[in-house]
Picture 1 (tube, helix red, strand yellow):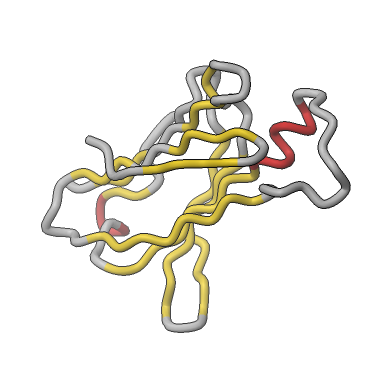
Picture 2 (tube, rainbow, N blue to C red):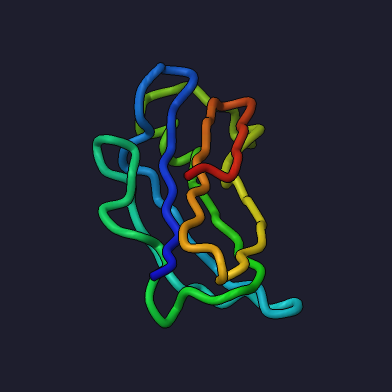
Length: 117
């Protein structure tokens, strides 16, 4: 059975990104359909897959990580208009593949991602 998972690492503090709100959308042309919302746990992971079972199908998806809220909650002094507030990752899923893992490494001024396993 296919599934989509993610986790967040905070490069600025050298720790998992805990209590980060994540939203998953299915992209249908110009429309976004929200299919899941989660908050990362103490290990920077979601407690379960963001997508699995009958909801796991081929298509274009968008993850939104609320990094600005996370850094504000940690007490970081961010400008009124932070460089990174909501990190948006748009990617495709081929449902013939069993597992997509999309990790995020963040700081207030940069991020990186890759297709993990």
